[in-house]
Length: 212
Image (cartoon, rainbow, N blue to C red; front, side):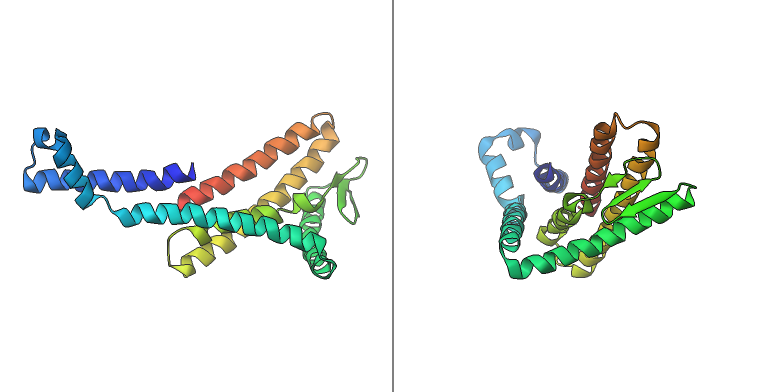
């Protein structure tokens, strides 16, 4: 989908340039249909650097995804870096559970908090583990603008910071909604959990599309 978005913009630009070429140089439709003529037109007017940028973009994303994956493996196997990683996870956890607690209390619910389990009194609560914190999603989200062939780092930085804050806010609302759902029915928790996760992924993709 990312490739289609990138190449789609390039194709629209190529077609617009071809239309301008037809208008101002009076190239006939018959001439355009000739293989040799079309080849010459595309050789002159298809911007090869755009194609190169698309390939570079996809290559960079692949390399960054691989680097992040290998970095996580290294951190989890290194006792030195693992403690810092756990501390970072702890900070993000606190930035999730307390806003959820305050939001539930503002809605009139009595809550309880046991380290990574936040819930409404009378329910089992929602356990928040490392994958639930959204750190991996933050990384994946930031890889896209970093790899994208735009050199305006001011825009990239603003996009990444605003996006991370939005995703974090959505995660807080997601966990709050899951807790409220538990007061009504716990039998469909997995379905609600999956649907709310999908919603955040859709928002992430829409942010990418808007950035492009």
